[in-house]
Image (cartoon, rainbow, N blue to C red; front, side):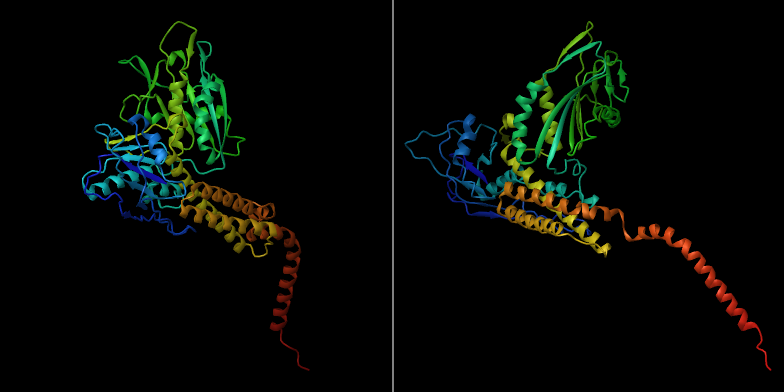
Length: 490
């Protein structure tokens, strides 16, 4: 539920207090002709504007508290609520929105806005708000990235992490020159203060595990270029992809992991390559001196200036965690659209993401899980069609029925706007479908199709078949010779 509260005095007098406004949009996302999911038509702009009280707003600093207190009940699922209600004269007039701000988006599921002049202006303003707070069609296309034709997707569609039951996060400190640099970083305290609140917020999406390590004598696989003008070393944008592979060989975290691993690396360059800075595609220095790799993680360079040796480096964990958490949002696809200048969005604080951003993430992962289950069950059905003499156990059939039932529950809950229960049902469907597909009784049949039976039985029957074939050939030759010989007449 998204509630919209109008600032007192901002709604024109000719507008009714109750806004009977409904705007439904359907934007189809074309998928491949071989996908079992069929066309998916999301309704990111399906909202109806009905009643919600405004309450008393004490100040701009406490706008979110007032919004959250007047938000409609969570039973009002999937609706955008908007109503203007005048305050009694006995109460003092609450302050208006700041000058230059027409829309204030809270960190929960609420917003404060000026209505503008007329219903047309209100419609345009609400549509802008919907695009910011609801799930756009691009997120649906990204969730179905494996099934949407390449020409229908943008360059960032396949950069988000795929939905998984769990993720492993590894923070690594790379010190290639420990003799010159004595690096001190409080990673344990930083994880507890900055990372754990974000993971607690994301705990409804997946399970997370966090570990850290320090790697000595670990160098980048690319030699930086020295710039005489700035007396510094530079890493160009085209050389950044070559940095990950040599470093990844030293990490060793993804070898025995059951879940996707997110790597966040802090690199302290050696003294011979200090200070080290990263350039973007235009040759300008990157302000954060960091970059991220889709579905892998991110790397930040901490370039100390020249000083007497050994140099003690005390890492500013606040700055480092700001960069790493921003990269974590990008990896999960939690990125905000470019906001108009008159929009103001409240900071989510230590939680790292707002409630409506978490809703968008749950929505996208639910759609992805449903599509994954459909693909898995379709592959299983194709396998059963190819292998005619296969025997299906009752437990495999039960998992298939359970997966189908969970998908139906997820779609029903998703249609009602109950995102958390829909996501949980989709996870259960993924688990059941994978159990059915990778059942031990079926797994060995994947490597023993009908065409491999000939390769197994031919060496056994060929030694016996050769004498039989030779005998048949000899019998045929003798029969032909008897036909050619003239018969004797007495």
